[in-house]
Image (tube, rainbow, N blue to C red; front, side):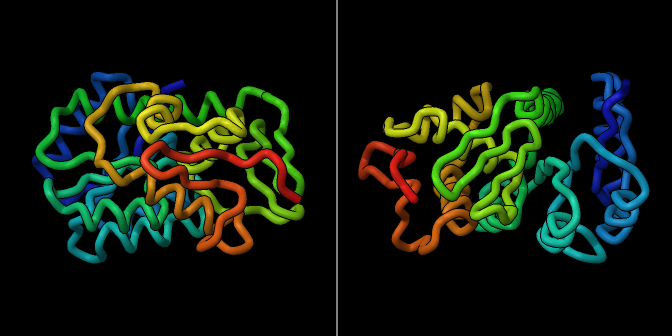
Length: 229
């Protein structure tokens, strides 16, 4: 079955070029030139991933990402202007799974898309749930529950949490976490892991400012605490 991609890009020439390249890579591409159109397309069909440009004429990509995340868990790859670190941080906080700064090589776009889609498939292969007191990580359904209530996380954040939980009690560096989750060596922006960890803490910790489950180990990384209620 051909994997369907929603490309949200208002530049006709770039959209045509990327559609052609993604098509040659085996994807079926639907182009939405506007944010509003993209949200309509998502309501009409299922997509394996969304490639989302931040600069759109009707609404900015961050607003599209925010709206998208209220209804769908589809992986989102943002396209950002090089050097706009704040947009990347905000995008990750709003629920994007990855980002790619412009200009970029089309083959890197394909590689990143395949990476975020692999993570989604890998996480839904029927593994058993992980239980840590009040916290449940259902790896088959790719769902997190605290006291039985669902916690909202992106696919990337879910995979980060599972990676930490599977190595509970062990300190994992940022580099190791990126390697565990991405499985590919890409240029990455240094604090992206920290942004995602912050979002995970907001979802699963009673007091995210004083975390008890995911602990920061200065100059080393993060550790998932085993013994918690």
